[in-house]
Image 1 (cartoon, rainbow, N blue to C red):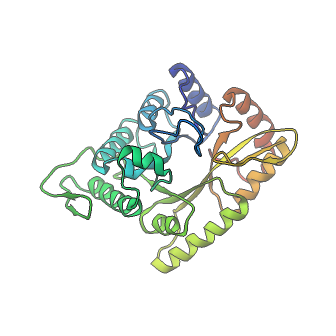
Image 2 (cartoon, one colour):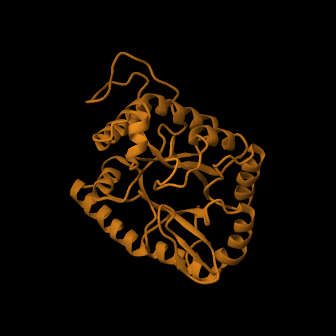
Image 3 (cartoon, rainbow, N blue to C red):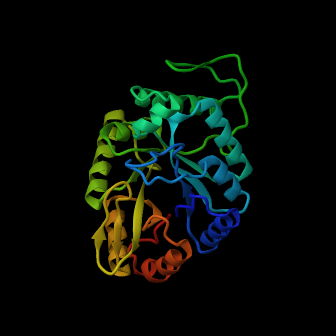
Amino acid sequence: MHLPQTGAPPSEIVRIARRAEEAGWDSLWVSDHALVPASGGELPPVELDDPVTLLVWVAASTRSIRIGTSVLVLPYRHPVQLAKQLATLDRLCGGRVVAGVASGWLEAEFRALGAPWERRGEYTDEAIDLMRALWASEQPEFHGSFFSVSGMRFGPRPTGGRVPLWVGGTSRRAMRRAVERGDGWHGSRLSPEGIAERVRWLGDAAAGNGRSLAGFTISTRVYVGFGERYLETGGYLQGVLAPPPELAAHLDRLAAAGVEELLVTPLPFGAEVDSFLDRFEREVRPRLASAPAKA
């Protein structure tokens, strides 16, 4: 489930996180935007809490539920600093972190941050490689186009030696990056047909790289809410509003297309989370033909 991230009171964030954990939800997620257009942009003009800082707060208030990012835009950050943040968080919470990462898409945000828009794909690939090298060795040796590390010590180590990286994106290049460098793929705003197509692309990329997808997680973020009739929403918050039976059928279609883990984000944007959870747990979960949605 996606956590409240638009200025909710700290106690409310903790309460929702604990409720989700006690109700058997599998994971809690946050998003990443440092800046958004003030008006006329592709995103709602909202301010998001910093994702890693928010997860530290939630990790300290929960015991076993996994926590993750959907997704961190790697070109916005220095990979050494991010590798240390994620490893520290993972160590403090007992190995519960999953890092969704991607190359980003909002050009205006890149420009405002001075991030490498034109080379964002290259930067993302190298950032992933460098973070893995840092987690693998106390004295990593790495030389790339953007970064060079030699004769330095790095720590701490993540609890299991590495933080799982789920690569986000919906392009063929993103599919190849996920197979070449990731532990999973994390999509967003896709129909069941779109998911099925990406699963085929992942299979093609795996075959081309001689990689087995055993243990490789296929996940997606899904925006859903309750409505009197089935309605597909548009824009950045592309999703489905529908009565509970049709919501359950939609989630089942995503599972049938190959999704193993669903990140559920309530619609409409800014929806009252308790009310959504009440109805979802009471009226949607029991109707799922597949295993209950992980979220």
